[in-house]
Image (cartoon, rainbow, N blue to C red; front, side):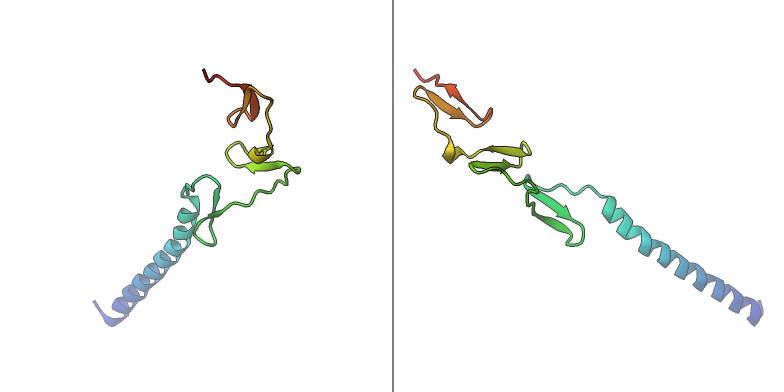
Length: 102
């Protein structure tokens, strides 16, 4: 093999190497962005930071209510609930229910 052929193969190999590196550099961030990022309740994954951060509710609740991240709605603040005698507050239904204590 003469010098010209060897130089041609060397340039071709270097071109393939640079092309492969360029493709890989573009694919890695795309793959990372497509990975499901599971955060605990009340947190959101921020791609720019690469971690879960506390989610700020975009909802402003009326006075006496607070945002419940599990149900994604405003609910009566527990401290503001006053149930009639013989009833107690059920956080699951967000209402006063008849007590079942015997």
